[in-house]
Image (cartoon, rainbow, N blue to C red):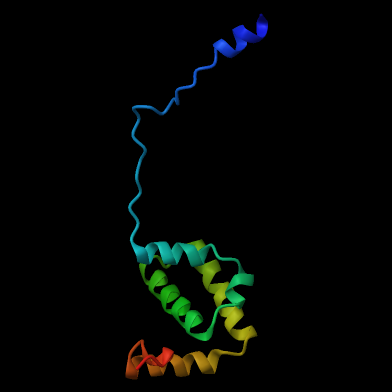
Length: 111
């Protein structure tokens, strides 16, 4: 009898019925920046050269918007450490120069 009473007292309807959930609209650029800012250093290590270049550009754009953000600073520190560990500083500079001269598709050899 106690079991029936207990089961009968459960309300199966969700409590959020009638309430609106707040929606956060985030631009694709912000989403990508936040995604990579939360990316662990181990995952950054496995990015290709062009992906690292994109990360570097995103980092500098983020710093321009918010130069005092601690999370952006930590993201940049991890990014710079990976670039120096992989000894890619010269190669990334060459890719950046190629990107400026020939456009973004040149790095992927799509033309």
